[in-house]
Image 1 (cartoon, one colour):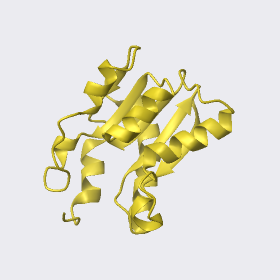
Image 2 (cartoon, rainbow, N blue to C red):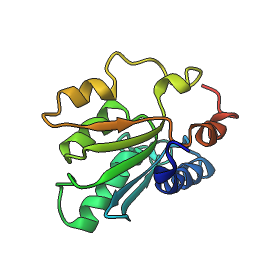
Image 3 (cartoon, rainbow, N blue to C red):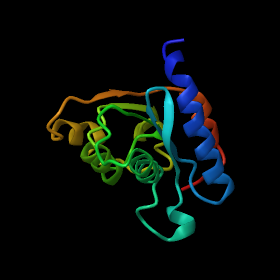
Image 4 (cartoon, rainbow, N blue to C red):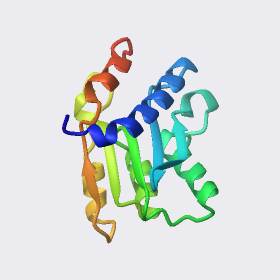
Length: 151
């Protein structure tokens, strides 16, 4: 399989997404990896906490920064079940993460997510450093989490 080396960590992000869904939020999850170890995990919690910043990627970033005691995550990789929104993408770039692995893009969920004029790839160009973005990892498994969700 093309993405087999990323499957393990994307499955961890998918577990976070499943937990978010079980708790009443959208099934979005993320993990941050450094040297083969997960240093941050996050799930979508904005709907249940009422805090608009409680997105999976932001929560994973907060945990990784605390774990590593730094806001410089340039040697880390983030695995996100869904394409990060502009807020999350900006935070990822602020942390200098240069490898981003994504399951679904916004275009994979047109029935749920509106189209954006500014996508993560657009923000990446403005980050000031080289960013590697790979999409489609475990796409079908992640799509299953959205089968019963309506806009």
